[in-house]
Length: 192
Image 1 (cartoon, rainbow, N blue to C red):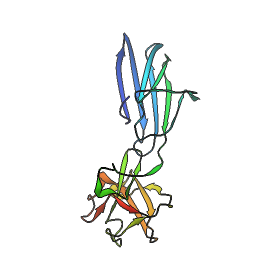
Image 2 (image 1 turned 120 degrees about the vertical axis):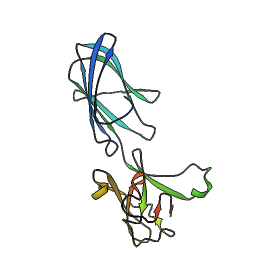
Image 3 (image 1 turned 90 degrees about the vertical axis):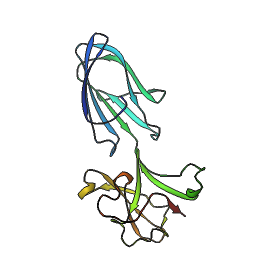
Image 4 (image 1 turned 90 degrees about the horizontal axis):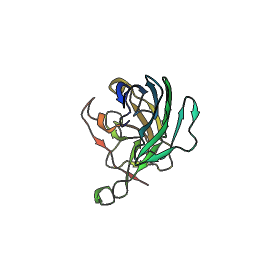
């Protein structure tokens, strides 16, 4: 399993048909529910990708926590005799992170960006009309708060933050900028 997106698939493992149904709101939260449905009991490895940005996760099968999950080459490996309607629940930790750029990018020295799971965020003028984009400095002590987007950002997660000057800031997913009205945008911000 490489991509976490609501889906259904049917395929063969050896001579056994396997159906899988995936339910998730990823990338907006880290919960992935996978229903495994072999036509008959079948032993095989189920491999689920653990993204490089993920620093922790929990996994359960049929409501029972997997005590010492095995991760090999970036994949959680669950080896068992799978039965029809087994349910795997994977929860990827997705805290808001303040991240630095590669140190070779000199233009970003002393700057930081916000990331929630795989999604990078930006400030956009549409949500921050009174902010001087050239002078805004992130407050490193502020705990950024995920919130529900609205309008064209409906079903997305936005982040609420604060500058060192006490200005309330709204961050949107970087990929969604410039979809509501033209204006300034900034990903890499100074931090105190």
